[in-house]
Structure formats: structure tokens, C-alpha cells
Amino acid sequence: MESFLEAIEEDSTVLNAATMELGATVCTARAPRCEACPIQTMCAWRAAGYPDTGDTRRRQARYEGSDRQARGAALRTLRAAAPEPVALDAVLHDWPDAAQRDRAIDSLIADGLVEASEGLLSLPRA
Ligand code: SF4
Image (cartoon, rainbow, N blue to C red; front, top):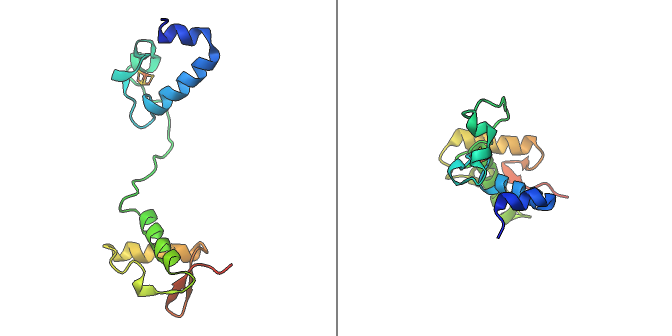
């Protein structure tokens, strides 16, 4: 049976699939698992001591406790009640951070994802 490296040298389709699989399961941007990598002895980045690549892309912020989580929870409440509106103070009434709650609701209104009228919130009517 031929080795992994022999197989990818012979067939570019296998090389493409193996590269995609490696990037998805072993050499992830967030946490490369070099100790499990089948090409660790060939890896130039590893051999160079993991130099800075200049990649300045922002990592996505944690979801738990984020404004995005608050926005999602508010939308779920309004979706569950639709087409009926929900009282403003009943949306995320038990959210642990009142300022975040207000910020989430204000941003949903500003983005046009929620309508506010007379102390009530609802999803936009089509
Ligand atoms: S050895 Fe290189 S290719 Fe393999 S996981 Fe580490 S950084 Fe990625």
C-alpha cells in the first residue's frame, strides 16, 4: 500500500482533497495541530518557528455573552410571538446586562429588523 505522500504525488485530485481535509481538520487557522499533522516534517512555517505571517484579519468575537447573542434572543422572542407584538420591557426582560439588552434592541430597530411603536416591538410586517 502506498503512503499518503506517494498518493498525493501521483494524483492532483487526491492532493486537492487532502489539502482541503488538512485545512479543515488539522491545520486550522485558529489552532493548528502540528503534532498530528502528516506533513509536519515538510512544513516550512513550522521549520521556521512559526513566524508572523502578517495576517491581520480579525477573529470573530465570542458569541456567548455578545451583543449578537442578545440580538438573536430578542429576534427569537419576537418570532415566537408573531404576528403579535411584544411589550418592550418583556423582550429580554431577564437579560443579565441591561445596557447590552437596550443596545441590542436599539440596533435591531436601527437595522430595520424590528419595529417599535407605542412601547411594543414586533417583526417588520411584509
Ligand atoms: S505542521 Fe504545518 S501544515 Fe501541519 S498543522 Fe502544523 S502548521 Fe499546519
